[in-house]
Picture 1: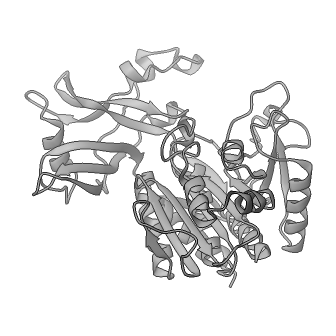
Picture 2: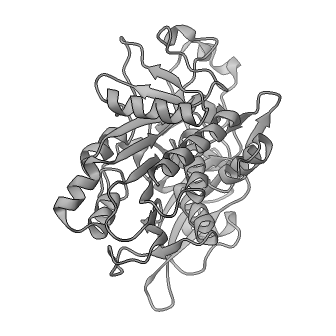
Length: 425
């Protein structure tokens, strides 16, 4: 079944709104896969290539998800799709609360390469993972979400800074404290404030937390071009498309989806793409090193991460003939320095796949005198020892608190990934 644009866009919007953090995104994807019949595994369980044929889900750190269909026996190839669950944002400092001029404020740290200016004057919610002391003194893990704004970072009036439109730098340490409200005394403890700000906050002593601020404005669809405007399009849009495609994949093939955390800060972590989440699973499933080497050499990974759509006000920032349009279809991302993964053979394979699926394919390569971004593609290819190719949908305002893309492109990306996994069967 191929979903229509409107139902697809609505489903994408709901996923984005329900996934303010990587923890929430992974929980959402896991629930969808389990509902469709996938079985959950733990890394601490004893499992390997003797698993019955079927679909399986493994988590790491609650923020990285690995899903795969296992045909049993000795598969000869693997079709792998990789994406990432994290997005640039603002996160509270470990001891964030303070008082300034009678206002309770929250100090933040910047996660990833965030565009800072768009965070001003936004209604900001707070969500993430909290660890509390359980009844038996063991740590209990809870996902939390304020589901409403808890504060904002107000801009300074232009009358008090006439040079603000002349390119003034933003200092997040001094100028981006979140204003939470009035106070007549000292700042409360962090745990006490969280209990008052977040409904259904777990009881018990707060031992640790990983929280993120987010724009509380819901995702919107702009007609008539079906543009979607939301936070976290980079890269939850890819996770959403890939998860839906996995549900349509041939269960008789060895297909795998790896949605990693920490891409925005370099992927060098246990749940990141430089970790061994996928490596360890493949080694368990195909323990013989010779068979595993043959399998990986015959396999392909599609690294799926959004691309830079040409901006009509800044078209000169793109190289000629490399200007992807929103609504023009998925994008093949190429870079001679291998910041994007790819080679001529894999490019040819993807072009033929897209042609058979009747899906347009645009091309992006960064302007030669500008630096290229990075993805999990080259990291995963080197880590796993298999060929890889970088693709994605074009978007505007990458790393902003409010990004824009085309739901038409996102739906075609899902169809392309479904075709990739179906071809593997």
